[in-house]
Image (tube, rainbow, N blue to C red; front, side, top):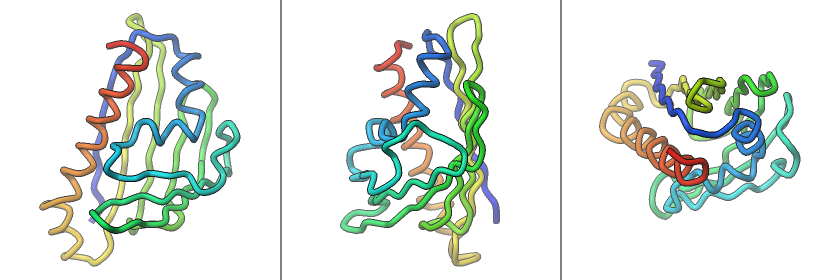
Length: 151
């Protein structure tokens, strides 16, 4: 079953500055909770571009590390980009990052559409654990972005 989560945040910073930060793949490490032991393995050295492949290792559960290969599937400068999982823990992962200049600064909207493997078992795991884990990751990200750019 496909699931979708959406998070929005408005920060008092200009769009150019916010875009530059988010378009730098290595900054994802700073925006990920430390207990996930996130590390970029390959492909994050350049400014983001369409077709870019970026490989990570990340701990979703204690004492385990997963390989995660994403492709930057779409980019429209200072408007949006999409990362799509090619190899990783999800059956399907499509993460849209949208940026819009607003009177108060920049509005960031994250929308993730995803599906877990394992059919009905995956849906149960989603309800019990994954949904909460993803929301916690985005709450951490909101706090980090507020620290970096103001709230």
